[in-house]
Length: 325
Image (cartoon, rainbow, N blue to C red; front, side, top):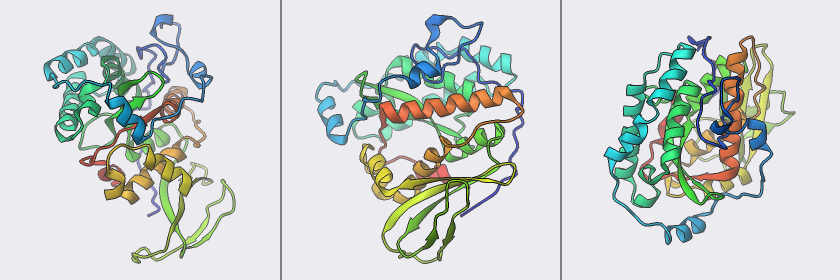
């Protein structure tokens, strides 16, 4: 499964723009041209209380009793998306990006509608997310440079329950391909892969900077009980960053997911989780400070989401396609 890639960014002049609206947003990056009312900086977010726990399935069930199910009005949702047009286009223009607002707004509405139509529990669909979170998610598309184009599969919109605020939110969710692109464009890595480790595998761990010895038969369906997994990223100088992910961590993430997607696509969801955990460990650096800032902000955004909210994944999710190589 290990791979290398020749992908190179065509957008070396992109920046992670400072215009992300919304107070308290973890991907906000202050600048001389930004106003204090637009948000707080990343360091302030990292200092917030870590006692906020993402809800369990039972928590979601209890909260649902207090949530009225309202039929989605997609005309209103389109208006919410259109409110982002000015900020979105300012970001794109100032950074010379190729993504277009009208295309991303259409992709966003299609994702929200599809999620609503395919979700049994409408109160936890994207259509029920707070308007501010929908706007922020679309603005983050421009800031991150990760299009919602379903053909490229770089990023998606997902519902997440914010336990501290007690509200359902819409969040941008980078896919495996999206995280790889950010890592490569920033100069942190030049390739990445994820592997699961089972009882019958010949596995020998050294340290986080050494490629582990891992021998197994990829055509053997029964490899024993799962032990965990690891994300192996190769840096541009040929060295490695290896991030182990325990079975306990995978089980915890699975337990926080609402819906049966893990039961249907367990291996794919586990590999997605491993890549996401590995991304947090990549030492961001490179010759382009704008790309470095963009990658570091996305790391902070993912870290904040993982600590303060739980992703709600439904049975009809297309998450198995996110790890397509």
